[in-house]
Amino acid sequence: MRITQGTFSFLPELTDEEIGLQIDYALRQGWACSVEFTDDPHPRNTYWEMWGLPMFDLHDAAGVLQEIRACREARPQHYIKVNAFDSERTFETMRLSFIVNRPDVEPGFRLSRQDAQGRTQRYSMTGYATDRPAGERYGSTG
Image (tube, rainbow, N blue to C red; front, side, top):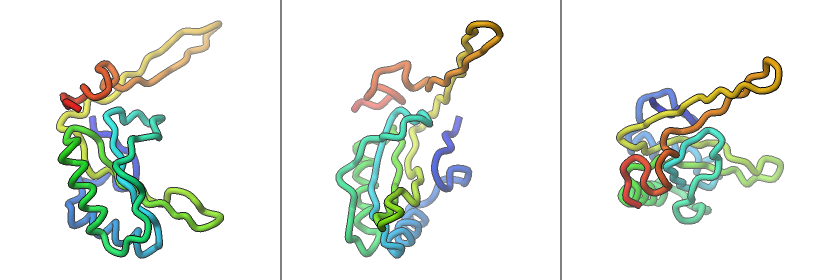
């Protein structure tokens, strides 16, 4: 199952050149870029681990691409995404976010149904990845 979160998620994987072009676009807008990773891509897991600090005052994509490569090397079986944050007053929010790395196998999610009082049914979604402890998901070793 292919996780579809963020911008470009329904497109084929972006090449490093295409990623660089998107980062250049974000930098031209004055947005600060950051790199994050996780092994639990549940849609409600909005707090991924940061790879380093947000990169303010960059003027080309080379610095962000370098951090992406380092994160890929250290966490090859994790989801890695690039965020572009607009710090302009009145916005102060993420303007762009897209996945730049995925594990070889994406196990997906299970939908659980619980019968409640009366005819009420409650549903919850659990990622198959969470069946294993953090750091051991997707066959990663750390």
